[in-house]
Length: 136
Ligand SMILES: [Zn+2]
Image 1 (tube, rainbow, N blue to C red):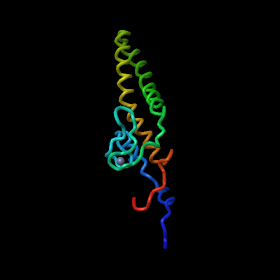
Image 2: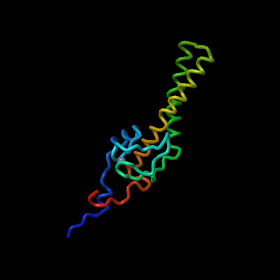
Image 3: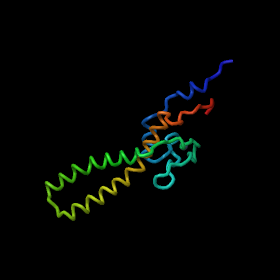
Image 4: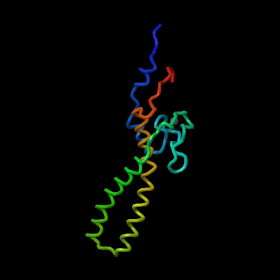
């Protein structure tokens, strides 16, 4: 009797870019409809729609690192350009860029966390690639 090995099924490739887009939208990388996060940054234990488990995720400091990397590389040249072209009042410059930096960071942080969890899911990292039962 031919058997399908669970190992063969677990090595099936998962869609990488769709998972990343779902993660960016803070949705389950598996089904795309269940919410990935509970509250602002807390990753759910599992998807309420498809029951995919998320507790394997190890995003750790990755989203914060990427947020600082992106925001820093956008805001540092931008503040230089604004300062050299328009020479605004220092208090105005500081106020505008402080608010802009905080707003951009708050926007990016949960989305990058979703992307990192989606990468881990798509690449079967940290236990996301557990054995798949035939028929699932
Ligand atoms: Zn799901």
